[in-house]
Length: 412
Image 1 (cartoon, rainbow, N blue to C red):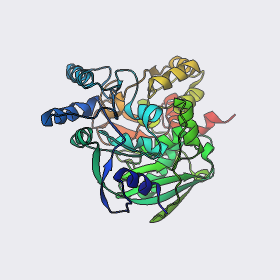
Image 2 (cartoon, helix red, strand yellow):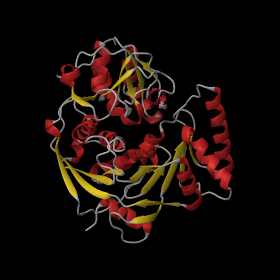
Image 3 (cartoon, rainbow, N blue to C red):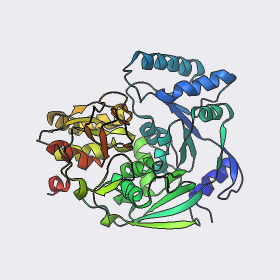
Image 4 (tube, one colour):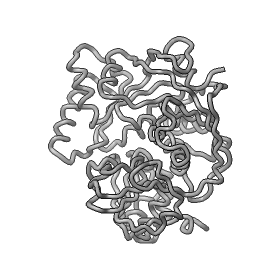
């Protein structure tokens, strides 16, 4: 009787493992982006010798297109590295955010994925054991093919029922954060089961997995099911086997999806979660819809549905998480709707989420963002106040210039 965590790490370690064991695990997929890549490469070149680039994914996403001379210099040096070392899975400016690309093109259920970014956990949506590591750890993986870790204690989370209109995967993540607090799940891996798999789509799973790191979880995985298989088949034309899981857990958590309302994380902590009714009416200067948390097609679709034929009052920046999401949104007419509503639309960059560029918050501004963190100064000026919410709340709030319950715009 093994949990998904024990199955994956047992295979990676080449032996049976139990929670608390310290193991050396073979890494199936390693990754870095332009922001952390400079330091990964610095460590690799300091040590010298050969590296395994066959399982390496490199994507430029944080400071793209480069907004500063230094960012451009770093990208030139990283292009030289991937060319000289023969890295095939390289995504230059415009392909998309690393975590979205790993989800769309590379990660496989039941494998170990390590990346030089905390939100590598996003591919837990596919049932991969994923963690974000430091640059020196990822450099070591490139040179040895493995890393060491402590096997976390698995916790079972079951999603019962169905989400109601205007409630999305983001609200599930915020619900957990509001109830248990940030860092509560330190030392745990969360394994999610879904009562009605097709009622909780891959986009929502990716959002929840993405915010697993905000919960303090060592890993957050959706136990693979029919949605996992169908997603990989549709995105890559691949048939995949999913591991048979029948685990024993130290704790079990049940979540009734039907009872969740649209939620908002108020400044300056991800677990400062409020019902939308508690913050409705707060004036908003700037709305950001995008990031590795909520820049997927269903996020763009719901924003377009709310803004169709209307005009935003707050400035609103929309960034689909990858080129493929952007192209599909373009084909379906969502980009046209958003542009006509007054939004600024681009794609393939983390930009405002980290206060990098393409929309930095000014002094005392109020921001409503669909990204994953609302720490002080995260998106620009330290006096800016950042609220986190799902894309439907974000679109409705951009429309009215204040935090708004989106459900009135989604009713037939």
